[in-house]
Length: 241
Image 1 (tube, rainbow, N blue to C red):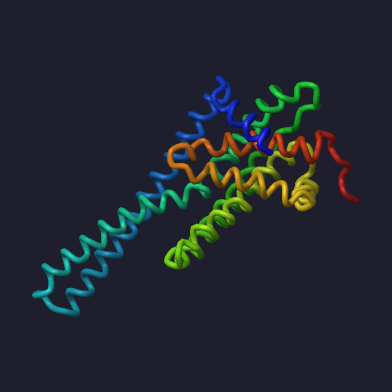
Image 2 (cartoon, rainbow, N blue to C red):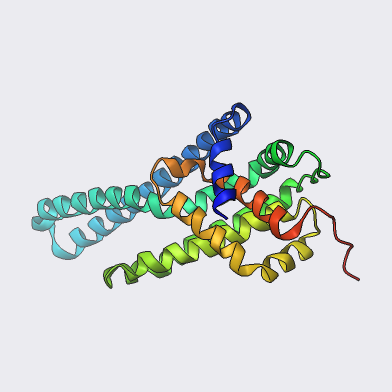
């Protein structure tokens, strides 16, 4: 596992990976900014509606203090969005990674496994569907974990291991689907669940590092290509009856 992680990290600065890295970072930043703008505007609108309702209920004398109060709420919401971006990063990178999985996997296979038969590109709709499902599950897990953040950081621990499971599952299956039908890729992941989860922990550690986590799709895909080669080989299995 450590050897696979070292190989994945060492290849990230190679010229082919740098080209993919710039595209992945650009798309991730665009998504984060768009999400942030949308959520901020929604919160500001809700604050304005609440302020108008409160003024109608309390009378004109409350206008000045209410205006200050809701300005503070809007500012706090902005800070919350900034900090929330850290927790949204697994969801964003899951979606972004689905665009580049084949481009990254091909580079890894060509560099480290030139004698093996090459994998077949995962159809983009299927990759996007897997990325979208993982992104939505990550957001759901984040929302569930938020209340537990007040319990001695329990929410952060739960979120970390849930991220390890979700990202490990997604990136392994995407790497495996280059050689196996989707159903068999999922079955292979279940058979080697402990190994996949261990690799997922490494991905969760990577995605928890600010700024660096923008490169998560490259590291996670490269890592899981090596893990799949270790546990699944390259032979395409026959279709299930």
